[in-house]
Image 1 (tube, helix red, strand yellow):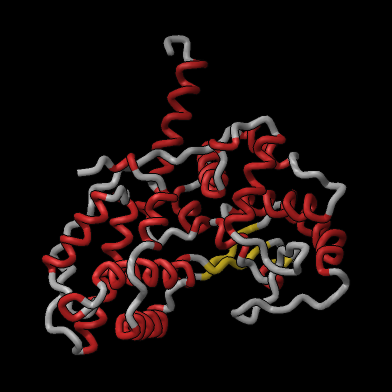
Image 2 (cartoon, helix red, strand yellow; image 1 turned 120 degrees about the vertical axis):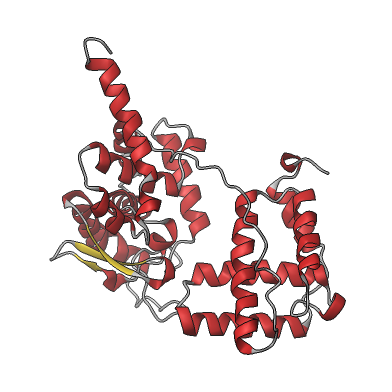
Length: 327
């Protein structure tokens, strides 16, 4: 078997592109499933896209064999998982694939297309439970101060950084924010998170100040004095590029790396999700309640939030060692 780390992400993308084209029959079944899943569960756009990618790659690998995607059996699924393992796909990617397969075949069973669910007995891969990588508070301060405020893009990035850190937003939540999501008078932002669940998060004085400046000074320049066209979902984006569109997740990731370098922080240690981790860790370190943190982060389960207690415990141990006379 090929070692997992011998394949880069670029290798896997080339491999995926080398698979046969998607058959029309499989494309129709995937589309029916996505539409049904959206209607029944209100899946977020990112989840829909992930399901589609996973199922399309399996269908292309299958290429119509044995009845195509709809008629694949458990042995066929294991063959596909073995192929992925041999080509370097990681356990977390395979765990997401399992969720896609479970949802797809459960839909086929409910619809009466299949009598059995071949994905039901596939065990999820064991995933490591990594501690969140959080920046220190001084690093966050340096990162927030990094954008060049003499340009509209710099002022926009400062507002985005302040909001991301103040509200603990996921990168998709940040770049997809519509203009009407922010209520500066009440000091809250309305966020649509995973599973299309809505939550209200306080802005804080600093992020409120920078949002006001962005809206008054930078956004009109980026809009070029013209009405901003709505996105594909009918919303007018809050944050704009020079092309009057919302920034992409990839573009924001690259901007974050540039600002980290300007702040004297190793760019490889700074990610959009790391800012969210920093928000949670710093709140806990300053005494925030775990239940309140769960609501602010938009976690469906408290067990997801509890991983941050491990980070807070490390902080307390460091403080104890530094200040206790017998530390």
